[in-house]
Length: 98
Image (cartoon, rainbow, N blue to C red):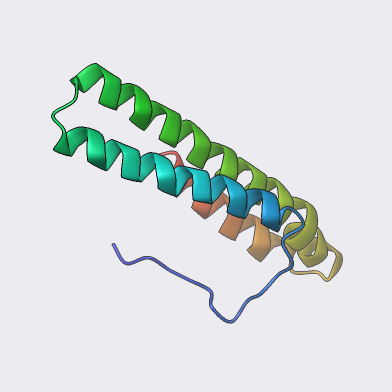
């Protein structure tokens, strides 16, 4: 299945710096897991770190979804394009929950 992107669409992220900071921490955590695997660390310790990464990624996703709903979806509804925007949001939520 090919990823669909909407590169022509842009928006202002109200929590951009907060998300970027969290993503930098996630990058560090992923590098740490890589090192743990290279160093033959205990599987449960690695799995605990992976769970922490998943939780952090979920927090970024939820924040982005909340911002998108309050800004982009709300604006689309006001301009009469709400159905398309809601369908787009629901599609991405379904992919996230797989």
